[in-house]
Length: 137
Image 1 (cartoon, rainbow, N blue to C red):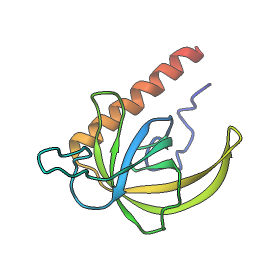
Image 2: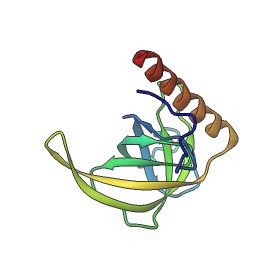
Image 3: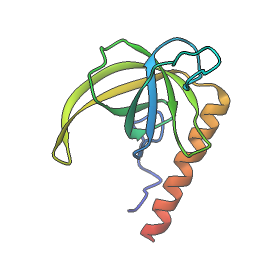
């Protein structure tokens, strides 16, 4: 893989092809994605997998379609200990066959990303890209 420094970037954010788990649910504004045993109730969420990720959005493989315009709470698991919370909005989707299995792929634009979450995602994306470039040399 060669990187042309003169190539004009069409995207606003660098996009990384990566598969990572993502917890998501309809927007509540609550960044907590775990069972609250003290209250005795589960805060429900679904789990999808990223297809690609940028600081501006994500392509997410999900089990059932999410209507366009739906606002979501999302927790992106970059590692066991790094799980930034973002608020996203579904901007489109399509059915695709991946490894012989039909999957729903949703395109999600991030609406709210705090500075800490943005920094965590940026570091993760560039560290992964740096490893890819080093392998290709």
